[in-house]
Image (tube, rainbow, N blue to C red; front, side, top):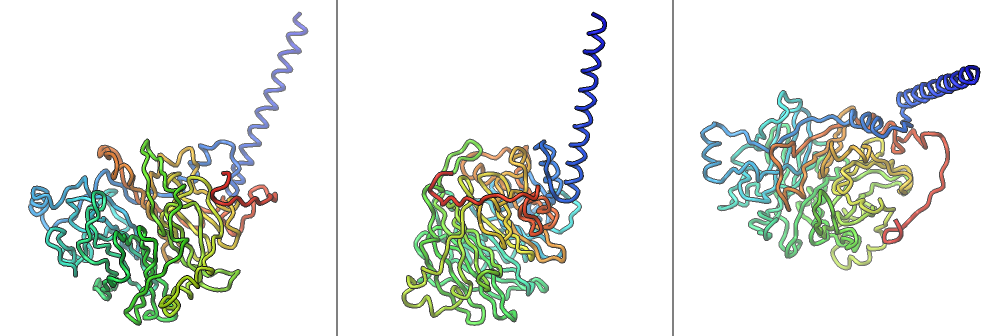
Length: 466
């Protein structure tokens, strides 16, 4: 009896030694691969923590505050209802040198300014926003001066050190759209903080219930050769503005329209429908067609589309029969069910980053590869991303020597359809080094697959099985 007990215990001990050795070897392999950019962990929380450590929290707020000249003026604004802190929500994010730019559209009453800045880096995690370029530049929505800023949705910074924005001219859009001023394109010289462009969109190019919510700029060989492209998200069109001509034209295409299947959102226990059309836009050089192209997608869609920028910037093609141009707009693939995206941006290495609002995540794609789901990566582990980012609404890629991705997370659906808990962190600005955050993903131009294997590519069109 003792002999068999001894043999049995010896066998268990031997098995434990083998098991411990195996675990240690797996841990070593995981660590080794992580160091060299191939995350092959079986533990999703470990992988998630590594990914999250590469996205840094720059700023976060429970609610927004503004930098008033004096404390007395701030208190007066609160008493008068001109400033209602809980009605302010940050939407757009941009960066230029040592400043971050934040937009605060006038979705509700009590938003004192629609565009502001905070320093970067900042000593405060939740700094007050300083209206840009000053308080005087922002109009009063109850007594509007349409030469001033009314309700800015998003901005973009070009290579000529100019900040461009689209001012929708719309207030209280959550209740009943109120177009108190014409939508306008405005640009500032960031070296002097002076207005250099103010252009009202012509009435013929603005439809009933239009909402202009995004802007991107293409600059040619010199700074005057610039075109701003503005998205009309509710009436499904693009407005192209030529700085040299000081004139604009409207571009239409059926691919700008939303897909009803993708218009149903179920997030944070809320169910709502957004029939938002063309929204996300990014410009890059396409090596296959050997030309500059605009990548775009409606918000209510799972697909990505492409069109030549030369087509969009040629005014004469849109003066008569724009239907002839429909054949030059192409769908390049889809992101799958719940793949709705708002904003996107492309780094110099050709990698596109895009928000995944239904998934509380950031997607990525190496534009040199086919737009298939096998080539689309996620920066955060799905099991932990919702505690880090909640509704990533805007995204920018800066032009620094070492490029970074900037993300605005703002819980927008809760703000619109429920009630934010102001004892919690509601808004965040996050930053990630472009090369670091894609290092372990299929989006890295240097990577094919983490284990070196090849995979069959299956293309599934939107509307089919997911």
